[in-house]
Amino acid sequence: MVQGLSELANVFDLTHRLVCIPSESFHESEIATFVETQLAEAPWLTTTRIGDNVIAQSNDSKGIRLLLGGHTDTVPAQGNDQIRLSDSSIWGIGTADMKGGIAIMLSLAMNLPQTAVDMTYVFYAREEVAHKHNGLLEIERKNPELLRADLAILGEPTSGNIEAGCQGTMRFRLELKGERAHTARPWMGRNAIHRLHHVLKAIESYESRSPLIEGCQYREALQVVGIEGGIAGNVVPDTSALTINHRVAPDRDLDIAEREIRQLLSPFMEEGDQLTIVDSAPPAKPGLTNPMLDAMIKNHDLQVEAKLGWTDVAFFDQRGIPAANFGPGDATLAHTSNEQIDRSSIDQCYLALKQVVTEGV
Image (cartoon, rainbow, N blue to C red; front, side, top):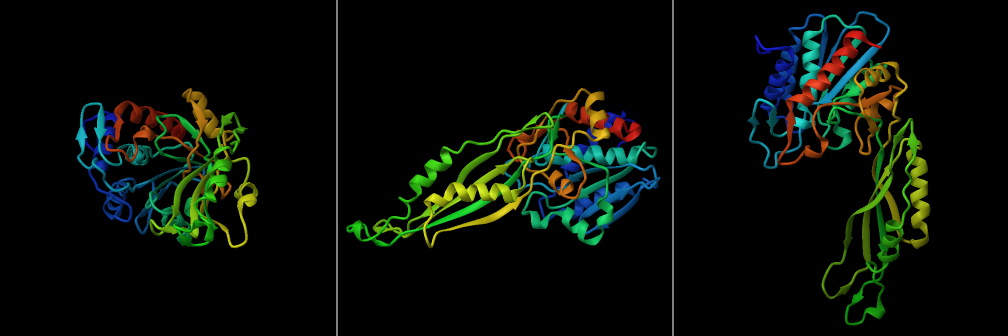
């Protein structure tokens, strides 16, 4: 950490240092080593490295454990690999998603030897790629005790608001069959692409649920995100396929959601057609009744809203640990060529989390 600067200036400076370390998914070794080296200067923490995941814990037997977590990887650069710095902002890949959150976690770990609760800081790899590669799963396979907690807060960019829980996500692939023929004699075949007409109409007319859960308004959605069909300009296609994304609110599980979608699409399916799940990830409950989270919201007058996307809070919710998203940066700028983070957002989140760490409830 840079000496002679104020506490908040240190966090901003650390964010810049982290952004300057490239850490595209599957290439997090350098940033993991940086984090591990910094944590070596905090003797009140026990630090464990598992692959490119770094976990630091205090063990003061205070009876309540708070886990702060964040991923160290970024998506590939796309015009935002040129890092710029001003007095109030940092531009570059990973600034919002989520090296500002990582800097806050690391600063708290380095500067707060005395805490009101037991602390776990989890810096994990490969969040931006397929879930099977996620660093949290690697940690769980090697040492699941490292992920035990009474509350988990993930530093995803939320503009300093609480984004409670998350919606689940499912991707389906619907394949419809036809009969191939020459386009000069289409009556001799059956056009599989034309069969999609009624399916698309049904999905377009789908009435999404908008349940209110713990005061948070979730909004489910069903969208076609891919379409395939046709092999040549003079052939009636005998196959067509849709990729369909479904967002699922946390008041029901994926099995129920799957049955609903199958019921919706079954009237348009015939023998030989197939509807398969490509991938899925469960939703997470808001968890707003947790005392630490409730106190944090009230003490800092934080705005609370539903997380409509999916994040790793679902990992913790599935294991009985309340979890929420709270971090600096604007999520709408994440992964864009103009990705950036403001000093004020970092400061706000740092102070809110510092109070939770030092005062508990």
